[in-house]
Length: 330
Ligand SMILES: C[S@@+](CC[C@H](N)C(=O)[O-])C[C@H]1O[C@@H](n2cnc3c(N)ncnc32)[C@H](O)[C@@H]1O
Image (cartoon, rainbow, N blue to C red; front, side):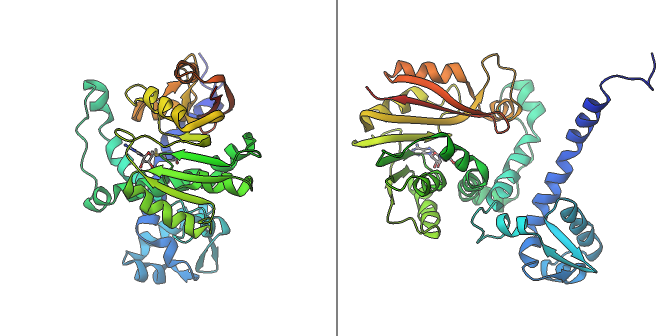
């Protein structure tokens, strides 16, 4: 056996990298949490950043070097400034604000430390508690995380897969921050949308819709799908990330969607979906580990059994682990 001629060295290197990736995400979350990106609205030296963020100079400089390596910060002599990518994604006023993903990631980070216990027992696992700030703000962070996810590729990808040219009124069930409605309305000029969600989520969706000047095309309905119907008269119902595997009552939600549609209306479902042999892709497999995910065929079967016609997977984004399925209301 020759170690020098070993096989799979490329794959081994990739695995090694994957194992260390958590340090990069932790550094990114830390820079965000400490306000490093906001401190760099104007270029600063490491000691100026440290003063502004109330941090240690030597460690701040090390963190800034990581941010440079991540392509978020650039260095000119001894001054650091934001790259365009960081300006686009990491300042709270950025259109594609990603800070919610990092804040929400903090909750997932702490939760995932209990994974060995969770797998051992099938229960919740004994994980250390996240800091109080993340517990008390979790809903807000979660919904802004949905904006960060959608605004950075998924919503644009979906809008390119669909032809809603002749559709006029879309119901966005559990629409979260409303990012999908915004992008779909921007792509299809005849379309209007109604975001249907819990009151505390609608409060955030209103801010997002206003920020994108879409209040004339997008309206809101507060509701709880456990005891309220969606209303009627829509020619499109969009359900994104509201059916995460067994126990998510997907069947009921799809039936409620059917009631909301006019004949010929289009149901669009997007979710993390495992491939049919349940071997991946990785983002869907990880989501399944965290919360749950259907396979493509399972969700298609649920939609068909609610009575939808022409149900099919129209696109699958393996990089994100997302599938897009449509069906027609007879
Ligand atoms: C995972 S988020 C998906 C948000 C958005 N559709 C997306 O894909 O980015 C789930 C959404 O369902 C909403 N939701 C959860 N429980 C609900 C309920 N009982 N009634 C109405 N909406 C609910 C949440 O407020 C949240 O906006």
